Length: 363
Ligand SMILES: NC(=O)c1ccc[n+]([C@@H]2O[C@H](COP(=O)([O-])OP(=O)(O)OC[C@H]3O[C@@H](n4cnc5c(N)ncnc54)[C@H](O)[C@@H]3O)[C@@H](O)[C@H]2O)c1
Image 1 (cartoon, rainbow, N blue to C red):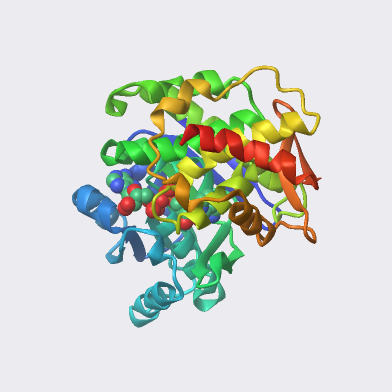
Image 2 (image 1 turned 90 degrees about the vertical axis):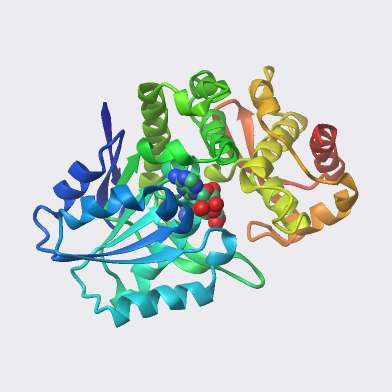
């Protein structure tokens, strides 16, 4: 089974393909009319270890030369230093405007590789091959690329759409369970803001052994999430309106990540907690959310945070210094009801603290 989604961004239109063992046919389809004799590959180091033996022959069968660079795993690779290293690699090896960069990995490699593709020679063709659940349903779609700055995450970057996204679930066979659950948070986010059925469909993640997850159901779920992101990006590519809804739970999450120095909590865990807090704040500010939707999934998340590190005052300060603030009041994506998001400024700090209570009860 293979699903195909077209992303019609203002700047360009491209396909996302989702399936199992689709790498070779999808790349061949892309390269068919491109006249490219070589490819440049940026690949996450763990994906390299697990899958290069399979990827390399596929690529070598399609082009004469394959140049590759391993990207060390972890957020620290989204740095100016690593961006410079990838540019050095491309330029020293003789990149030309018509030669595509194939970026294989999770969101870290994807964001770094996307930004490198956007900036080398003022833009070279880019193919994303996401290998984490998060990258498949979220970061490889929509064209946000970038690296971090010492003053904050994702502060340097650009909007740059790929030519194609190939989400081959074969790669997930080696993905650690923790990373599956990180990706689940973004899937549940789509459930909250767009499609109630996702809360049921995501139950495949409750399977104790994720390697035996039903491939067809997984492909359908990933494809559905990509379609939702595609619809949002089509409406608002440069985040001046509805694209903000994709940040549901993220204002709380970013403050939590910062308070934990991006160390003891993962992004996915923070987003899950952030959605619990956003649900509470939605209710306190007039939202009608009679049913809870996330309870079933709580047990999948294992937090290692010490409550002592967190104070409401500090967390609220972090939210105020986030990019999405207005003056001293914080803007949140909240729900009027399930699947009906809105951006709302909340002035009542007592309500915000009650939302944090929900998070603290979890820890
Ligand atoms: N551009 C966007 O729109 C967007 C959206 C959401 C998140 N992001 C960014 O994405 C990043 C997080 O992405 P992520 O969660 O994919 O993390 P990641 O890229 O760090 O990958 C997580 C871990 O999984 C490993 N890994 C990846 N694929 C694997 C595989 N198939 N088998 C075994 N190990 C594998 C990696 O080596 C790493 O250790 C953050 O930097 C975030 O800011 C970007």
